[in-house]
Length: 109
Image (cartoon, rainbow, N blue to C red; front, side, top):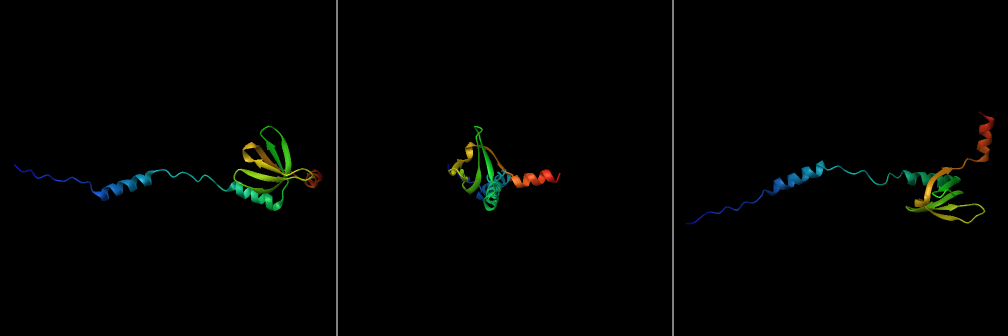
């Protein structure tokens, strides 16, 4: 007694289509870096804006950003040594308004 055995093989085209449909359904993650931080540092570097850096322990240091990296930046200070500041230790940054600007604001309310 002879039996005809038929080889059952999946259609490869169907498998590829299924993979493509599943890949299209996956949600694409947003980019990790928005480049807003880079733009901000470049803007402050070009203008040599005086910045105040407030550390997580409450210490405040003033100077201007000379260069920056992904993890740190160099703060150039007048009359004091320059600092390499790690971004993980920063609570926040803000611009220091010049005394001239403050005087003009007081005169022109």
